[in-house]
Length: 341
Image: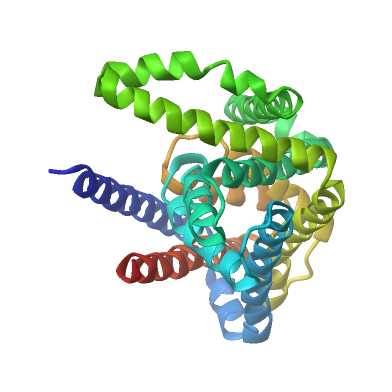
């Protein structure tokens, strides 16, 4: 089996595991929450609000694509808005089937470089700044969400506290590493000898020298792009920050629209706070696409203020819009790109 076949086999297995775990989780949640009232809620459901929830998710894709477009303009890439939107949607597929959604970043780096006509180093700088903006958003706002749910977080089983603590620790470590890279980009270049020794162990000295030269070139481009963003493109970084906040606000509004479609009056602040805590928890890389963790975490947090008869429907609808829609759209677009190239 070649590397390409092995990669396809791994992706297929990850997709299968993610979907099976997610579906089993949703089935169990429905089994525990469906009541006679649930059937009445289904009869009165409003499709307009559900359509609005889907549109919010699509608008989130546009905001994300806009963020890439704004930052890529600083390095004179040839990316158009439709290109960045395609990059976002394609990366959602691999993100949905990898732990911590980590598979999306390499795909975006590759496609930004390929479609934008820039180096991998430049593309990596854009994606790194993307992640930094997201991490700053969650670090800033997480304390308010935890304070709002302090009774659930601090007066419940130790497992939830441990998971949340590990997640916040990972967030903090990621922030520290990224800030270190931004302050001293050469910190990465100083690690090249170690990287070369590892590569030489696997591929031999002759091939490792060629790879090392390519890595050195890309890291130089990466460092130059980071310096340009932090010194000359602060206006673009600010616009990207606004688009980051917009993206997450759109995503966090989705359960509100679903609840209104189910005839409920949503508590907007709690809905937002619940998802902030949830997104922090699913950073732990345990299952592909955070399957199982996302469903049960969402259920636990929303059970505090959502009726049991509505809760299962809310979880299923939310997961379809924010997860399965990503797999469907991202998978179809990925197949189109593979066949085209």
